[in-house]
Image 1 (spheres, rainbow, N blue to C red):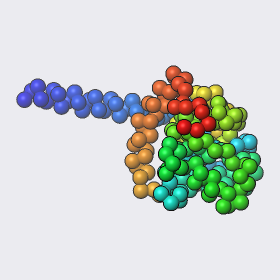
Image 2 (image 1 turned 180 degrees about the vertical axis):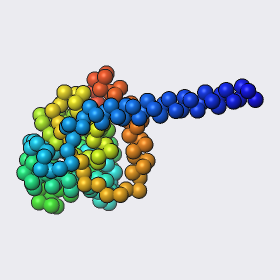
Image 3 (image 1 turned 135 degrees about the horizontal axis):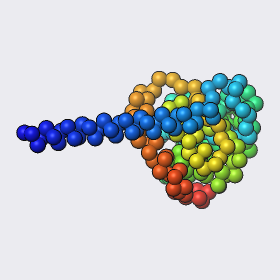
Image 4 (image 1 turned 90 degrees about the vertical axis):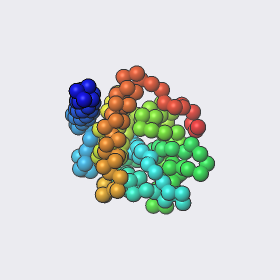
Length: 209
């Protein structure tokens, strides 16, 4: 019985330590990037490009609520003359799933010329999207749009890659999966730290998978 208690205690302590480390890394990343993240459109510095990070789309090509908020926010930046063009980046690993064209079509239906939309079909995760934005698409300066819970990690990666990007928080609504996503961000921070420290290359540097 004593041995079982020791095992339980050790497990609980290990879990507490792991949680504290995760929260500490989250706090560090937020402090490290807070000066580069904006929520007031009047304060965000103008850039050539707005980068919209992909998220799930429905089988009919309709944007999920999270992705729609990102693209609508990017449109707001464009209409306020904060950016001149769009880079939409996301997952297009199969013929029947295409986040990138869904975003591009959404923008064009709202009056954005096709010539002002760059497409990155191999932005398979946040790190790949940031790396490829410069290495493959040649974006030198940008405003990155995603939800507030995702921005610190995104800008931390961009900063680690020596990219002079700022972040602008997407106009967010209440999402059914918000709590789950925020918990996942705690783990994703460790992946981001690993990728930045090792300066790893993305899954592919080709134009498409």
